[in-house]
Image (cartoon, rainbow, N blue to C red; front, top):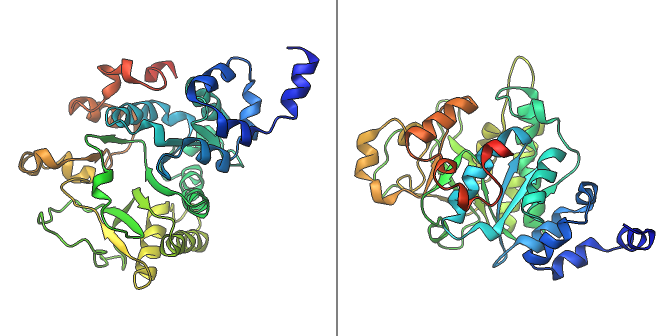
Length: 322
């Protein structure tokens, strides 16, 4: 590349350029940009480029989770919603690998985390990884976007957006495995034995309202008040539940239907319930199990490891090539 072109590129305003480009021209850009240029790509830039109908679908991913990201993305592409997806990369390897294959759909919000530590459940690295979630979501809300957050150990079987009915501030799912009636309440469930509800922090839909922002700010406060320690290996979910409980009187909350958004403790362990609600399932969460290999095996056992039969629909590449 000539010195003149390099000088032009160094003075280029990426935010203005991305706002004007199509996916096709972005792929052309990929061929002559270096990985280091993605370091200059900010969350406001990425949100403006990716958002459709003022809405984003967001996940936060470290390099170890790339196979699950690929599987999750295939399921979203099968529902024609992939253009709204923004991957928040928690390390540079993820940032570069996703943008190499799908330019503009990954952004890193500094500081980058250590990829090796971030994926070990119960570790301080895992806490640091998940504790950043409310800050990312709050920043997106402050930019004025609706945002759906998913963990990537999920699979979409249908389009979830029709279920985000009404104009509530915060939408969420119950993480308890006991069967609810089909016409269950959509309010925040009552506290359990630990004094708080058991709402899942892995599937959340937020509108850019004062109420949704209040919940995110309170979540951040709760995580700061209960940091990780060797004695108490915390994660982000209790803090989310305390935030919901403490703001319930001020925020319009909506519990999504269990039949459409079941926890893994119900979907993978109660065959009778699955048969009775067969045509209602929308997003399946592969939780209530720990370990990458175990999660992949369970997905395969239930025909939900889509990279095996639908690799051609991948927006990235087969998981074992990432």
